[in-house]
Length: 597
Image (cartoon, rainbow, N blue to C red; front, side, top):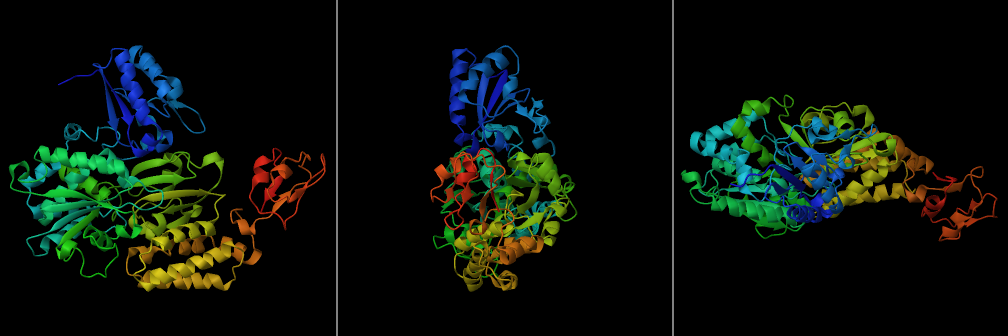
């Protein structure tokens, strides 16, 4: 076995790849060869390390020096200074927000300090296309323990004891779900992984599949053993080509080593897993629609009961969990349910992965213990709001979730607390908004997404969300009337109670939550015909402040509607009847003399 004095870990997740990490990796290989260090230093392409805002990322081991926003032309300096002379390249280190303090080791960066990684334990640390690295991190030991020392019933009891709940949005007990499938009679059962991640801004499952695919395979195999399944499917959207590629490599490697397929580890247990690429329909995140898609039918939900545990894929008992849920399973089996259950709150055990997006300084993936507050996630891990603006709200749970305002930032993040606030855990999307966000427009954005993704099978979702969207568009266009508020609330309540599947039942959540916490913004749109955040174009009015205008004429020269007139060195004016509210004048003015409101 080749021994190396150092490893250079290059992030190979989708985010860093799109920022040029492949060129960086090539530059490292070339420079190491040039310096005759290729037999001393190993280059490892990893999955996503989570800190996407700082990509491309290169980490030097064993010391763990964290270089961020690296470019290919930085590589000769890293190798000559750090790897040859032993001097850290200071300019490429992470700088803490506000203080600008340089942090050499990733373990000391605030973004990572409050995280507790279980599902993401290997992401960014191993080569996902090299099974030996996963095995070196105790990979497949949980499966071996289950197959050689535990009965299927004991595995299920361990999962129930751990308190693991489904991380795909529903939050149902994983152990109970497995138990139902296990007790369903029949010689043929299926194990299914839901990797159809469709929430805007969400990339938790994609990162796990790209960075640690074997953890998902191992979790599925343990579940298959527990319920008595011998065949499985990973339903992953085709827009995830890198995840699919690494899954295929992982499946082939596991089969070659006898960890997947027939007579696994010589125990007599057999299970085969294959990939089904989805076409990107959001509704296929619902389990009955997902199974219909695997079968070759249009992805549309069916009424329940019967539940998949009784009558699922091809009418056989089936169990469906999402990527993050399965990634937790091997650790629970290996370390014991008690250790896992020691994390989190009474009814929400373990950790949760969130995709931090929006107006945050630090965007990326964060895995935190259940029970941590939203304030800690947003300000300690996320680094606070960009450009020192004021926090306004956080949309949690994706299009199916709800907006939570500042007064509830200290709420513990768990399933029950979020539902009480009118939001939900969902799969883990977390979008932060500042004072420049219009909450009516935010509600319109999310409802527009879910309305377009509706399969149209049931009337409440097909027609109800369309009517709600029309009302929101009318309000944003300055044509709203006071009665619209009551209509939105009534429609939302009816759709939640009568829609066929989870997509329709949760579609009104962003509207109902913004009405609950930001009613004043709706009133301003309807009664005053004003958008307080200055977002809704139809309600904006551009004005030139005479005292600030220098009469340079720059605004008039860029106005496409010839709505701005004036004399040089005299204040200019905007003809509101001609103004198309494009904002070109504001962008061009150097004196901040133009305002909108």
